[in-house]
Image 1 (cartoon, rainbow, N blue to C red):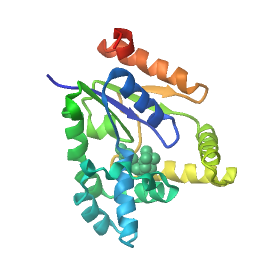
Image 2: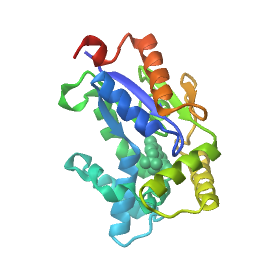
Image 3: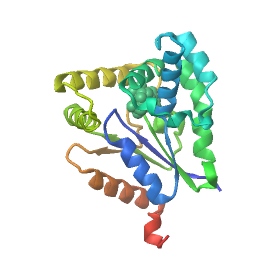
Length: 225
Ligand code: C5P
């Protein structure tokens, strides 16, 4: 039986990560944050003392990555330096190609024999899993996303200047959407969910309703499990 694949793409701080985790948990599916693969490559390049913009070294690092070894849970992947390095290695076509098989394998055969997988990222619905069962593109205005990011940084005790956070967000958006390979854009058959005026709970309810209407798959809690 083929697995149910839910592709959730969107820009930085759109809320797609939290949403994807909640959706996967509610449906009893596996979850893959594909951004963590790019972050892992970026961090490995930095640890080797190299420049993430060094395409040759980045590609070599991506080919040597073993995501199943637990590297994706390294807390250092969550840093701003890791995000910055990730968006630089992500423009290299050979890096993207090296990470494809792992992502497709995860979608086709979710770990633990689970019946489905939720993958979130930038190009899941367009490149990684163009035949995904349901595609969602989660977005919000750049100002709303910068505000969310600012709050998240302050909650973690990291001082941040609002105008810097907004500029960083715009720069990362530009890099992600203007690159030649797998740029950030909604798949033609994706459902666009703008969360600018939604709470996390409202976005979650909207996503589950859409998935339910397309697949008939509902939350495990509704089954009393
Ligand atoms: O989603 P996250 O912020 O962790 O992603 C970090 C960076 O990795 C993004 O800015 C993007 O450049 C890259 N990325 C990508 N394709 C994906 C996921 C992430 O290019 N599917």
